[in-house]
Image 1 (cartoon, rainbow, N blue to C red):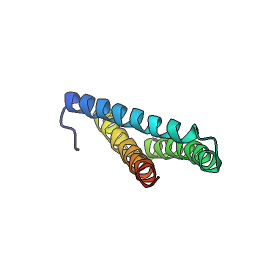
Image 2: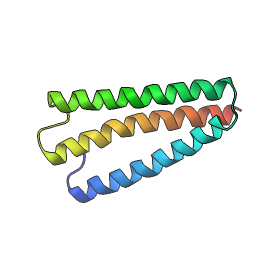
Image 3: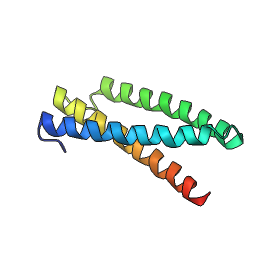
Image 4: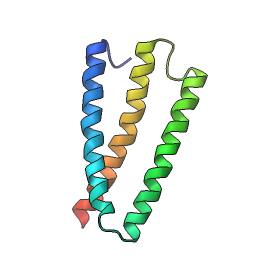
Length: 98
């Protein structure tokens, strides 16, 4: 388990929140263009939200998130961190290219 205490779990959660707000800003910037790329991003965003929700529900129902409250919280944050990091890299790379 990557987070040894509830405090470290809290700090990781706070960091995830900051990264997610950065992704929101990148997406809003892209959506403001109101072009084909913005429409594609909006569709992708909704598809990702529903997919992430379904994945987490399935993991929770099958015990894939762990068997303790701390383990479940840690695995949820780890799962969401991968998604947010992937989106941040993708949106930042497109922004740098133009």
